[in-house]
Image (cartoon, rainbow, N blue to C red; front, side, top):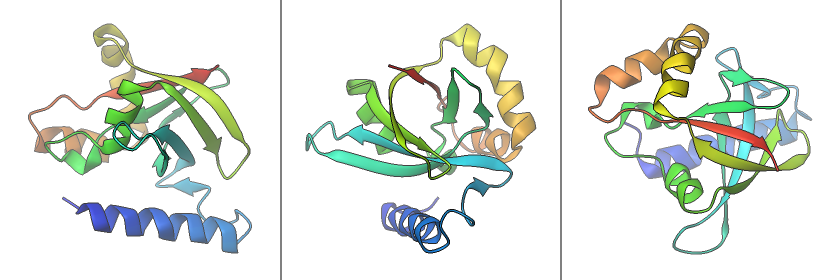
Length: 142
């Protein structure tokens, strides 16, 4: 699994590519739209941003996956939004939009998981690497 430092470096490189190329590189990753998710740190109270992919991007809903590459622990951004669901999302280097985050219910996850894995099979591989059920997070406009 990537270390926290490696994840921070990858996020920085992604942001830099978007900025330097005016969004021409980095709008999609592995065939999925990229987005920047900003949460409020559960310990610091400060804004925290992370680059993610959206295997499902609909007009009124975005689905993101709290996989952390199959790591046994949840990503920090997931813990942050679980404590404070008011987030901001910038899709494909676009404007920030206020959104509400919530974890998919068991029934929603059962319905969405096959779509997520069909979009990027790596998510299925990540699930086999961990004993925790990888959460799906639904982002909807505030």
